Image (cartoon, rainbow, N blue to C red; front, side, top):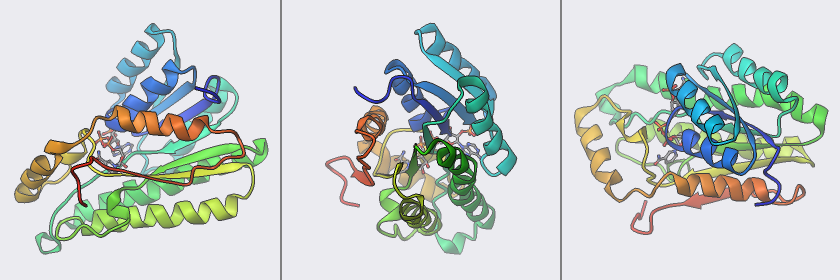
Length: 246
Ligand code: NDP
């Protein structure tokens, strides 16, 4: 694939699911990947297996709800590899539950991770992209960011609608030479389905995810967006299992 080898790619939420799979895939295509998440041991293992396979990778323990952590992750990309080409704002939490369950702590966590985490990623990367006059944001929304998934997914959908709005505004403000891709998947196999503490909603999610498609589909889609010519901006991608209506 063109236009990927040598690029420096920061990925939040890289300790599992989309982030891990994308890091491995992009590294196999010659990108230099910088991984952030809270579970440091997993990041260390993923990085060493990428290096064992001949790839280049670095990691930093990162909680995206802490602005200084996200800044530190971007700073690591610059100190380790000298530039930043792609910022993948991927870290996320899906804590499904009806509003009546009153899971206010999980609402707060989703807002902090899914919205503020993306904004901190923009805050850290945009000045670098401005200086370079190039860069690419890839922000993870969801089909729940296009259609409200109620009952249960109201706050999650709210955060993913916000990602859509922020990404579209970012695209307009960023102007030429900075690309913005919003990715909105349906059910894709990962640890995301285990995010709710509400027993009925958690069981429903496990059922819903029985037809989930593999994480490699996300890694392939992200590679497709990155591999376009520099003046081509793939703005919005929606992908679902063929069996999924929502
Ligand atoms: P996973 O649960 O497998 O991965 C989520 C990642 O986010 C983990 O690496 C986790 O790492 C990280 N994370 C969670 N909280 C934080 C935090 N505070 N700081 C830093 N990292 C954090 O799920 P997916 O790979 O499926 O999810 C990736 C993204 O894709 C999410 O934004 C999700 O909403 C979105 N998405 C997923 C869909 C799916 O069906 N799987 C569908 C639509 C969208 P750690 O716990 O180590 O910090």
